[in-house]
Image 1 (cartoon, rainbow, N blue to C red):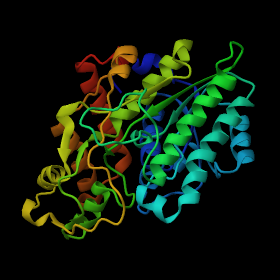
Image 2: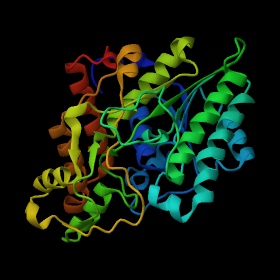
Image 3: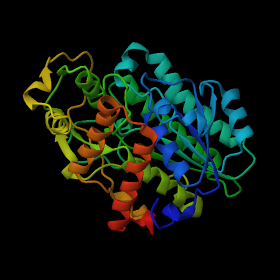
Image 4: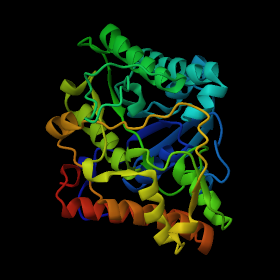
Length: 370
């Protein structure tokens, strides 16, 4: 990858189980861990989109995958017992806000009970394991203030998805204090919170970049609801570097057991939806005036502003984002352009972007490259 031992070579020849490995972030994390020399295992209920980055990267041939539902405790326990993982990254969830309005019970089952099942299976697991539980920036009770939310701020939400993520954090904390805080526990756990993640291969519904790329691939203008909505955008590799660093540090030092960390971009990455579309349109050689049209059709509540305070990750983990806004746009636009317009084999391109990201991180002397 680069001439350094990334993440202290922590993951080389280790068994790493990823729940939700067929999703957008799970697929990118799988590809990165494979390049780090890890033995990657997966558990997912299905392949969530068509197209699918999991399928485009042909990860079924590269990882040890099993289909199964985290809403079934026996399935989760059997998978963990069979794999005997050294690390678990729990990403499996119902991740779409709009879907939570259509299927609130399923969202709660997946995001709350599913997380509970992972924690319960780890409680019953007899061997040492380090687990990073990924929730969302939407776990916070968003009151639309202009400063970032800290890990100590109130949890909650005005919609089912946000409430389910806040509830998952509460369950995590209770499991930690009840079981994993004990000196004789074999399990170390922490949670990671990130949001507004973009990058190649995301085809989820009701997300601005996937909606845009689907429309542009048909040479149509994308319909958007709220062009002035502001988000602190980050490329998928940014929070993944945080998750991997947190896994390493949690594995090495018990003081991180039971902690939660935000992973997000700095303020320079905060742009409107309109900004993102205009800048992405340049990578596709599209007239910005023809790239989108505003419908104003809002079918569900959407936050106008939500950003994270990442001082804790900076202070305790020495984690800092890598990419500039211009690099974020280039990575994302180029990935989709190659897929839709050039029909390239996408695994090599994805690994190439990971390699370039690691080189940029090493040049900037990020701690996980030393």
